[in-house]
Length: 75
Image (cartoon, rainbow, N blue to C red; front, side, top):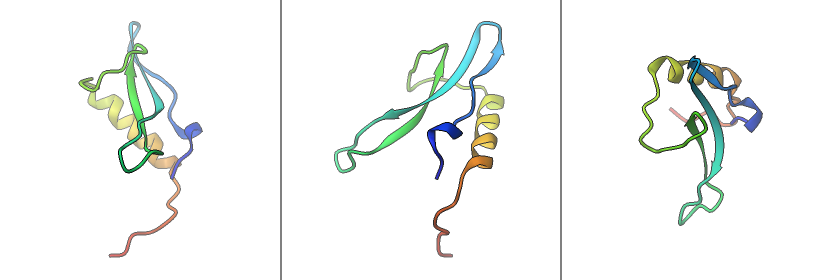
């Protein structure tokens, strides 16, 4: 589990390319509360966005350090 405040700050790959993340309400037919963390490039979202591996890795590392496990799965 993580809170919205745990989402990493925006990252830049150069002067003109900025990546940011936002929580977006995306209800499903059987789950109205469903939300996603989406990546935006220069404040534009597309589901076909190609995010550099270094940005993905940094995002995942930061978020993994902030996550709290609330239920350990059975093995």
